[in-house]
Image (cartoon, rainbow, N blue to C red):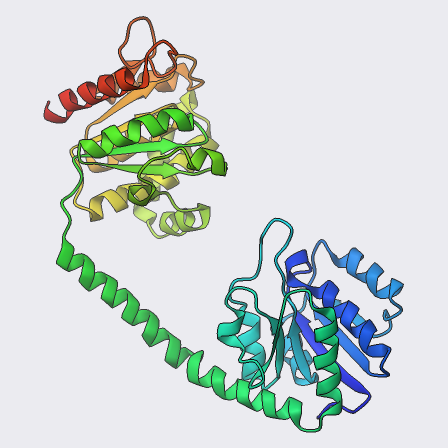
Length: 397
């Protein structure tokens, strides 16, 4: 059914948070009311901004036409889309700079034949063609949003025309039989490129966790590792941007993935999980279960990454849990490893003894050890030279 001259039914879907821009949709409905157009809004989804948005609708005297449906199932979502005239997602950039990137819900609306009203944030203009499949506004433009909603109510046939254009575009560009071959082509292209390049495996793999090691120390060691034809793997944790800016050769660094990727790899290796569980039992009380299995997930993923890249001659890891990670990978791939501990390492003594027993070499920041990572009196160049010499010895041993 087409909208009437006095009413337009708008549906939107998403988590009720700042950058979705629902506050601007509510404000636009109040502006349209001043021109005698009733904008009925259905918000599908829930989130921390719900109370704030409900209060806004009440303050603007449009609470009777802004309906909060909360979390809904797919069938309810389809029904709401089918009963609406327009889909609107007036997304913005939040105060922290967060935003939608490429909202899938817009393509879903296009497939149902709804005209889409959104903003020029991130990838939205790749989805919506202004004036052909909907309207693209500037973020936060409440007057402009109210104007296009009034126009969709009063201009006969406009909503149907834009909706039809959007549906055609969705099938041409975003249908599965279009996008999946494109994605497959990207994978095949990357695979062919990798096969042509066949990079030499690194002589050395160094593992760092920025939640455990000082970024300044890591920044000093990275050039030494790269000089020795090594590869640096980092776990970012909650590293600050100021920490990341200290790191040299950022384009050469490799990063451990987030927990979701690690969990998928872990669940895909049932036989390995049995082996890791047996190893956990062997270690007994020297390590708590949470630490062990979190590290084991990293070890499974990183061991496979190292294997796919042709292996390595030596693994190096400073710190506590990072050394446990290196030890686990060594157990899996039968590659020797060396470790360096901080003077005040909180790594459990019993577990540290177990790791030390299997390491090719261990450097501790005690007495006159040349790898005193926390000694302020050692100049950066001297610390780098000490590490260079130490790693070279164990690379050829």
